[in-house]
Length: 183
Ligand code: FES
Ligand code: FES
Image (tube, rainbow, N blue to C red; front, top):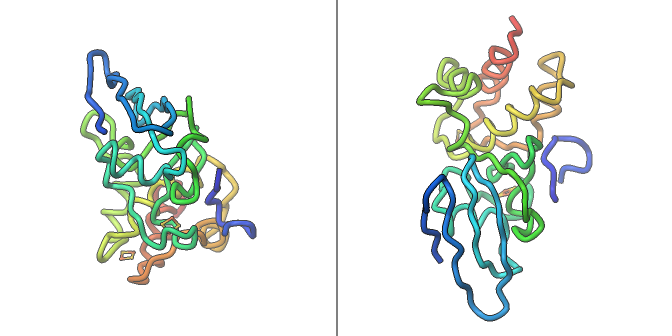
């Protein structure tokens, strides 16, 4: 599993059934079974064992909020949370996550109320094109839960795996500080 913590080593069909479960789907020869809970819903699919988690999320589950930037583990646009830990879904084989609980940007809001990090990004205008934003927000949610960042510099360091081509970094840092309750 490829983590995205900004440290030095950073670098078909699915039918929805009752009770928030998807129906198992058949697959082509060579496919393997995968069961993952995504944003609280259990999905059981047959997938190509070479499929990345990113492609399964976007192309099989229609969760296109998670973005494909470089597809090489360098930009962080594909960051999602697996068991609360941020990972690069473009470098993670989906079959490695069998049984995992995954949260994407679509799963952060609760009952129509934005997650505090989402609200902070809006409050601080922490994006321009928005392409990096889902990954930035997922990464920031995990960063705060990790509890390691105590200053703006530490936030910058621990968010270094998430690139913003629009250069919204000052606003992103301010948003994360707001969500952390820092002045
Ligand atoms: Fe995964 Fe760029 S798309 S790191
Ligand atoms: Fe455009 Fe970050 S807002 S890449």
